[in-house]
Length: 313
Image (cartoon, rainbow, N blue to C red):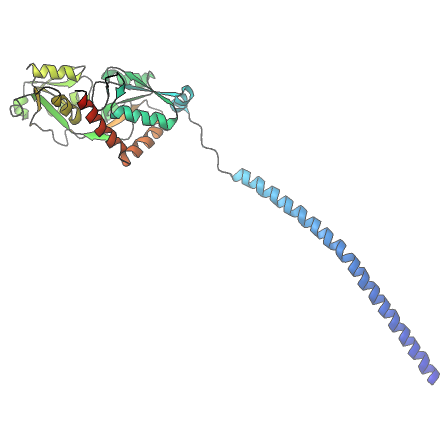
């Protein structure tokens, strides 16, 4: 019995030793295999990360905001030639006139310069008869017309307007001593009333003073002279221009007590641009809206009034 028991005990001990050896071997193999699995996983993770990065970059490129559209039409032409050509009639202070050195001046010329600066181009001003400016714009002789143009439905049929940059009352200028004499429509019936050819003032006389006779000349200084000499009852003009002409008339002209109603003469000034150039109109409006909102156009207007007065214009 003891011998058998001893034999069984040895057998059990041997089995235990063998079991421990097998367990230790398996553990060693597991430890040796672990780094290999980790390296494979790390490599795979790296490849995945790199792939994800490349995919993200590609996605970023495809979803990136598109570049701003390049200028087209007239706007592109202006930028290509490097200058903005503006048509005006430089005898209408304080809007547009020439200083003692024959340089263009006035609040409209200032506005033209702001537009040119915003486009990064030079400014070229072309002086011409007022009634020739819109045809010049339509034909491409000039890029834009800036000459205290009044925005009207009739003009809008053949030309595009910018946003308004100024509004002005209309005055009747008469010979000194006639302010009360020509203060009613009845008193002006049958009388010659002057306006610059091709202007809104001509239309105003026809519509608001139908019993008067429209008398047109190319320039306001000539109309002022006709009024001083008694050849016409007076002439209709924007407030700032009329006041300037009165101030420089050596007391020979004055503002009539006649007044147009708001319905008859509620005018706003705008630039004129050939139709079909929406991108250029938008660029001009951006400048106009800014200088009107920040008050810089009004400042330029006030300075132009002072300069014109100092020059006797």
